[in-house]
Every structure is written in C-alpha cells, then in structure tokens.
Image 1 (cartoon, rainbow, N blue to C red):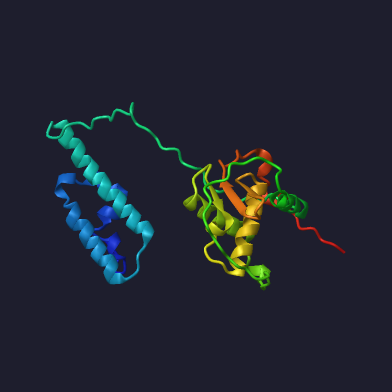
Image 2 (cartoon, helix red, strand yellow):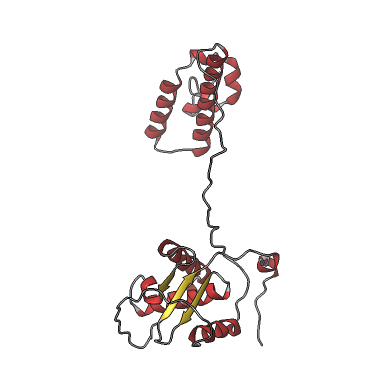
Length: 240
C-alpha cells in the first residue's frame, strides 16, 4: 500500500514511467504513452520542481514501451524492418580538433623569442595577400588589469576560437582585422594571445617591411605526451 506522502511519480499510473521493474508487468499495448507522459509533465509543472533523474527515468521507460510496440509490429509484418544505409558514398567532413587548454609553462624567454621573431624583417619569404587600404591611429597602450581575474588560458582559447571563425587553415589576415574593436585592452589581449598561439604552433605571425602585422591560421599541432603535464606535478615556485 502506497504512503499518502509519496511523490506523484511513485504512485500509479506514473510509477510505470519511473520504476523500470514495472515494465515487465504490463502489456505495452495497454499503455497510452502519450497521455501518460503528458500527465507526468503537467504534474512536474504544477510542482514547479523538476527532478532530472526522475524525468530521465520516465523518458527511458517511454522509449522502451515504444520500442516493444515497434518490435511486435515488425514481427507481425505490419512494419518493414529497418534497412541499413549504404555508407559507401558517405563523406565525413574533416572536423578541426578543439583548442586544448594546457598546463605547460610558457616562459618569458619563449615569449621574447616569439616577439623578436614577429618584429624581425625579411627573415622568411611569404606571399603577401591582396592589399586593402586601412588607416588606424593608436595612442600609447596604457591600462590597468586585475591580474586575479585574468584567466590566461581561457583568453587564449577565446582568441583562437575567434580566429577559427574568421579564417580557414592557410588563410592570412591583418592583425587589425581580427580585433573585435580598437580599444587598448583589446589590442593587448589579442596580441599577447597570438604570441602564445605562435609559440604553440597554432598560427604563424610576422610583420612586413611596412610594419603591418599578418596572422596565418595553421593546422593544429599534434599533441604529444610531453605537452600534457599533470596538474599535480605543477608546483608554485616560492622565493625567499
């Protein structure tokens, strides 16, 4: 006998949806799944408290009842069996792997080398894309940032995601064209993120003889075991 204080899903008829053991005790053709699920949802809305675990059980039980009905129809010949699709001509598009947040340290020396590489002129031969007229005037970059709130890895991931929306692999763009706006903070945020991405071989970046900075999106590098450092191995350096 059910307790009067039991929730509605633990009492008939809704217990059929929340207790999978009840499924073997009923004939699926005696269950109006649409009406039962509709009443279940109405009760959930009335209570105003949605329990996703109970809702998941109800969805599973409803799908099992439908599956049993369909299986019986197929066995009786009322429904044709499911045909396997020919995957011979199926072309799976290439999916670019997501940007991986890494715990590997990037030293000041590595950043300086990257900056020196960007600022060096004529170090490598590159084909310059079609020139577009663009004029901008920027003042000296001075602003304050709360370091405690600046998550460097998330910022780098955001900039890389923006680049992937703007460029395809192998395409080149001016640095000023990948900025969301021309604020000082945005310029510094994007530029230093690009230096990190260049150090990790996600992009190529250089400055031409006219002092224009170019960015090229490259194929993501292969991840090696050396690039993944367990978090427990990373210890802060304490200076005394």
